[in-house]
Image (cartoon, rainbow over all chains, first blue to last red; front, top):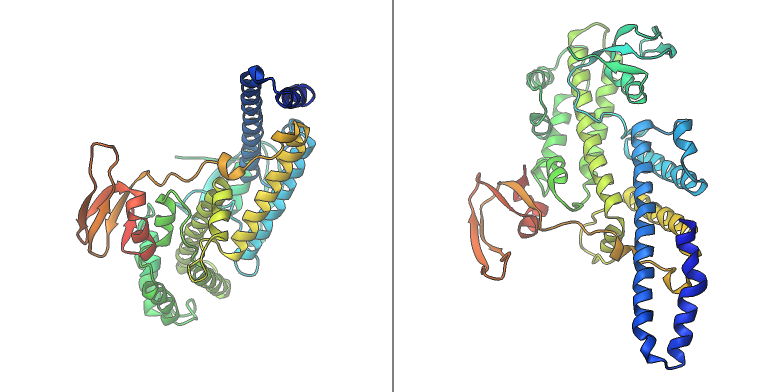
Length: 165
Length: 244
């Protein structure tokens, strides 16, 4: 990627401009062809980078604010910075929209079918507190009947699994 | 009622009409704030320019529609009232779960509406910002102030990233890229299903191919059509049709 970006810098345009100035019109077509190649390379590079940004954006909606280490390892420093700024801007917007506490738009992705759902724990998570104060111990393979809105985040993270009868 | 329109499109409906009837009868101990306030909010929405549920229109339209801050504010206020009432209610009461279900549904619709708008803003960000900039004084805005700030930050963020990672290493004449030209525009020629709410006459349909000629159609009230979005875009904005 770095080579594709930097190699045209030294050779391409400087050569092209000086040739055009010296009036060598027979090279015009070569210059134009080269320019088209450079434009195509630029488009491909930008498309690749933009696609990565869109996937990182999708990660924020899927995993939440904190990304797993395996994913962060694959991101460059600038991408991490983009992700942090996007996170901040999204949080500002969500806070401004829903009244006093804001409205978390990453919740309620699917229409609610029932208040409580049956979930199975996929890995050890520890103590989990519900609204009315009771704590539940989430151990691997244990099944619980919990309020839907509390479980949604954990289901997305892969800690719980919704059991469909 | 507005809320009933919203929830009609959800899968499980039997509970909702019960909830409404409970509120109308004024269940003791639960619904402290008068039922009239709920309905006045809904009536305000009906008297507004667009009677059709904003949520469905936003979901099916290919471009970002006009922002409706008054509807959002109204719904948020009602959600807050309902939550406050629930906190005061007795535990273990059947009405509590019914109302909580109602709150969940309303919150889902509101979240879905706002999420849909955010997705469109992020997808078409240069065009949305350009449209907002070139908007005339009296025209209604398609972005709320918060959405405008979000869109601007998103654009700045993306531009900075692309510049730092790729563009600044490129030859000088390739360092600028016009996002307006690179990012795809919303496809206004996509076909949408609609239901007509108010009778419309002489809608001009443009030809798709060179062999066809333009012709006019009349839209009867209650009829359903599949038509290109561009043809009926102003009708969606005025509330004369509803996208389904």
